Length: 212
Image 1 (spheres, rainbow, N blue to C red):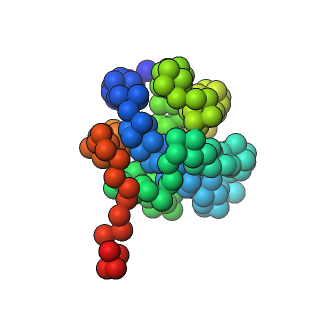
Image 2 (cartoon, rainbow, N blue to C red):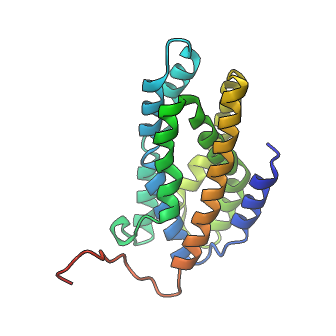
């Protein structure tokens, strides 16, 4: 899939210092935070479809089974990096990326296809390269999240495009806006990750913990 914004994001993604364990683990943590809502989004979208959208409804249900447990793979990778998800704070950009989807779904369930297409297409163009890069520094046990998405997502892109082609012009307009918005938020997430990833790893501290 050729899209200028998508290509720029992939190039920026490849340019990051993946040998920096703090950066990689922070990225895994943020990936966990947003993928932990993937199946819930799909279920929510399926629930809001009407009787004229049977194809999208059925595809959403199948997609739920395909995405089941992917967030747990990220947690397992963190474990093999000697990290714990409780040491990480969900970044504002990460939450902004997935949280808005629940609002959009209520307006038009098909809009979620923009979010899906953005993340799946990004994975296809970036994660195979990343998997090879990570194995120069880390064990296979700590890179399974990347490998799974690098292997599985090409089919998901084609399936999303099939569904988008069945949508009305107005729906496609909203889907494309969500596609661009998701890529923008992912770019902001990478920027936040870089800021958070100093040479010294500092575990997340609850700012509202008055006992500390």
